[in-house]
Image 1: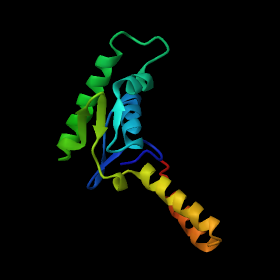
Image 2: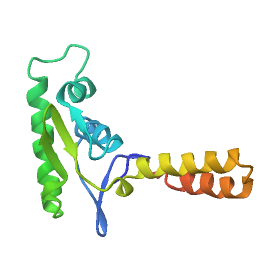
Image 3: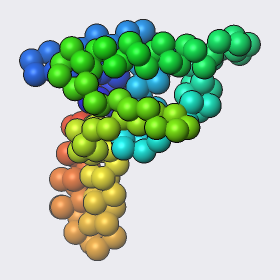
Length: 134
């Protein structure tokens, strides 16, 4: 799964079309905290316009349903779960590029603090390599 560059889900062989900007924003928020509950209120804040419609919560549910269908198409039916007060992206954090980026940068900083500059440089390079540009 990728949030470093265009938000995308990769199926073996190709990216999965997950929809427009709002479903992508919702998925990105869930990717930031895999296996953690992200509240519906927080998701509403991400997708609403300046004057949110009364149906913003219903829109979140609609986008989640669409994402679930996309996950089901690639055999990942259980990847997006309902858990009060919101939703959980139940995937291995190592499969989410932004989580791997954060971990790698933290390791690079530790290496830098220990004056292991060549190790730090390699780790920073690895972290930068996770960014995808299309």
